[in-house]
Each structure stands twice: as structure tokens, then as C-alpha cells.
Image (cartoon, rainbow, N blue to C red; front, side, top):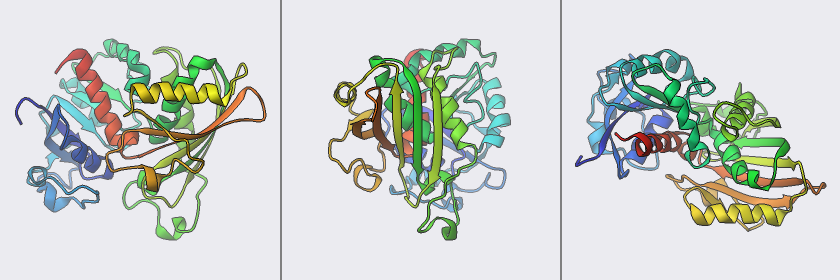
Length: 331
């Protein structure tokens, strides 16, 4: 693959692994060199084993690959899309062997020595890698909804400190994996509970927006909901600042970031946007922000943040972490 860097995908047959494969197919720096999955899948051809569910066709070269066992990969760089319980034991074993593991799993997100990164927000947290004793390293990206909350909140810290943040999420069914939520439970319905999700959003957001050693000192109240949307998590946030802030101030903050990095923030001005169906594409890495408004208090601002849960919220986020590592430390 010319001078591109080989990458192994763990959990390659699942929705996040599949999305990582499609994103890396056109990546300028990396390529998929190995696919790995559970013991039951190892040894089979990827194209024969995978139930491919993606808007982009399965790349032929990946379809022909033989699935390796999780600890059998040889590429230095790894994207891990493993379930948390498997990641807890597998990822440290790989780090001990010298691999750089960029993990989408929740297993080590809150570990004191493991960076939890949105590269555009808290790249300085890479300093935590120096505290890891493994020959290799583990880095993580956040929970899918955390990305859309913390990524949108980060520019607003320039306007003053937060006193409290109220958060409501509307999360797509693809976030539950495959086969996900039974159709009898989700069709025509909203489920106001996703196990462990509220604590992840609350704690991860504080960690990302704080320093590497000290989380943000701010209250966050979260309610999460599973909704009958295929892709795209929407976050409604009300931010209570320590001093008065106007909707124009917030809009200007987002405008500055959107102009500086249009692949990070997309600001919508229409009263009915952003919408998952209208505004997302299959490789969309943007955090879509809109519906900025003043609250009843001059210290309160509301906004909507939305993004593709399998891209910026998962596979694309892990690839962005890998990009950040290589840019900082080399291949």
C-alpha cells in the first residue's frame, strides 16, 4: 500500500469495525492490514463471515482476508472495537506486546494513565501516555454521545465557567450494535434508559474538558433515550454559566471554530436543523450544532448537537486518535 501505515481492526465484524474498514479504505495515511474477531470467527474469510451492513460496499481486499484471533495480529497500530468485557483483558495484553491500541471500548476511558481524547479539544492529554508502563500504549475515544456534548461545549469555555449542564440525548438504534433493540420495543416508541450511558456521558465529559489530571468542576445532569433513528445521536443541552452569556456570543464561538476547522463543527442556522436524516453522510466526522437560544436566565444557553454515532462517535473517533498519536510521536 505504498507508504501507508498498516492497521489491525479488532472486533472487525461488528458495526464499529465495519465502519472503521470503510473509513480506512480512503484514508491518506493508514490502511487495513489485518482483521481480527472472536474465537468463533477466527480462521474464516472475512467476506464469508461478516454480515456486512454499511452504505459503502465491502472492499474486495478486506473481504479476502482471513480473520485472525485477537492476540494474533502483528500490526503495530490497532483500532479496537471490542466489547468492554473483552477489551479489559485483551487490550493490555496487546499493549504489553508493544502495540499502540486506539480503543473505542469503555474499558480504560476513565483509567488515570490512559488519554480519553477528542483531538480537537484535549490533545494535551496525550501527556498521560508517559505514565503507562506497557511497551506499547492504550488510548481511548469517548462514548458516542459524549463526543457530541463535550465537542460542542469545549469552545464555550472561552465565555466563562459552567455552573451546571442539563443534557437530554436521543440516540440511534445503531448505537446498540447488531441485532440491537428488538423491533417490538423500538418501533413507534422511545426508551428512556440505556444501561450505564448517563454516567459515561457525565464522567467522560468532565474528564475531557478538564486537565489531564483534574476533571471539570461542574454539575452535569443527564437523561438518555433510545429512539427509532438508524444513525445519528442528538443531544439537547442547557448550559448554566457563572455569568451572563448571550446567544450571539455562543453563535460567534461556534462560527470561529467552524471556519477554522469545518470538519469538526458544522453550524446550522435553520430553525429545524440539524437533523440526522438530512444532514449526515456515511463518513461524516462533523459535530452538527444548531437551535442556539437564550434561556429564561441571562446565564443560561440552550443548543442542539448531533452527529454520526458510528463515525465521529465511534470508528472515526478512534481513527482520529490514531492520527493524533502518529502526528505527535510518529509511526
